[in-house]
Length: 221
Length: 221
DNA sequence: AAGAAAACGGAAAGACGGTTCCACTTCGCT
DNA sequence: AGCGAAGTGGAACCGTCTTTCCGTTTTCTT
Image 1 (cartoon, helix red, strand yellow):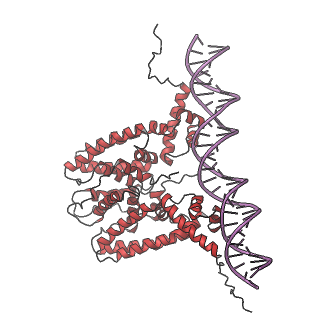
Image 2 (tube, each protein chain N blue to C red):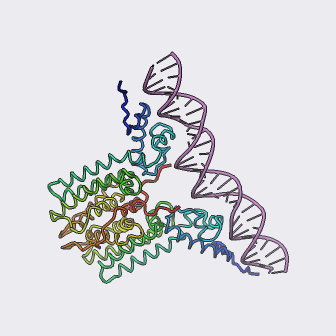
Image 3 (spheres, each protein chain N blue to C red):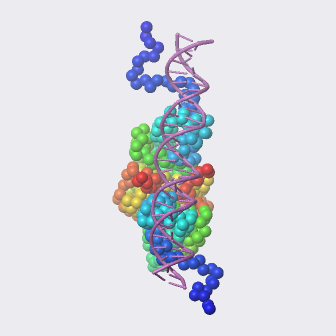
């Protein structure tokens, strides 16, 4: 008779139901832990949050990279979507500014995302693919604003990406107003022409904010 | 007779000659290692470079902070001096721009300096003093440029400090041209008025540069 | 319902880096 | 030169994080 499971040579065997459930739990836990502590958070922390044993995490994701890849594919999707949305804004400058603000905020809120976008190309295959999906979207956003004559013509998509990364590191997760301030400042540098400076948010930085540029979150033990 | 060593109650006993020599070797080694790897470099790496045993480092500097303090007092002096020099520039804008460029470069070349300036206030007493010496100098530089009407009036000294820190992290030690690019961009945001954008250095960032924002130097094992 | 296979948990083993400690050396003094 | 104190080096220790392993549990199939 015909077997119920046709011999699909590419079939990676479906996971058992409990395994599938745990896989989802692990991914959710990793999302939370990596966002808070960065990509080098301990595997047992992930396991603890997921409510499974460490061994389970290792069996499902033998290398740290596997977990990272599975996790951030969707986060990259979100960034790409936001970039496309911004590029479609009828006011190109508004779209660009909104993306810069949003991107900085996203990186500040999620250390793991920041690290994975940066590390793209160094190793992880699928993460690099994600970055390659991202680049055209940002390029389009930049080109759009340049064709409208509002963004200076001598910057590229990677300039914008670097600016997002730079600003995202300022002030720690709590000090969004401070990032607003630097976003406004950089935007004043990015525009083609302006007479007076755009007013900055009136929050003056404190000494402590500076430390955040270098040590975003001290792992609380 | 009068004793050769008067009972100075604050006298911390002079070090033996070999101890003094090793102290100097350790400081020189720490300067090198911290600049390359940051403040959390291993003590045994410092000991190896200095050509002494680990125990020697620990006896002379029981806490990591002691070593940091002894080391960076002089580096802070250099920054203060540069800020004062910049404030005395007959062209205030030129002085400000030069300081921003120089500061970013100094931090990029010396991870330890970057971290110690940032961490000031969290702990280390004398490092905090250093930062407090630095702040007025930068404030003066900023005020000077503002009184000349070339720097936007709504930024403070700490904005400039944060900008230096931000830009210093871009591109890794090797990519100074890239930092030039961002310095020019931020300066265009900082000035009071400009018509056309100041031309940027024509170096386009590469994908790898982005990684440097987050992982400036991978310790080579 | 029963047997076989997959998956689980968490203890144990391993790798790694920071810190301590003490037998030995070097220095300074008489 | 000889003695005591200060200083030294690096092996051993300790805590932390990673990875493996295996006795038990859960699921799937018939």
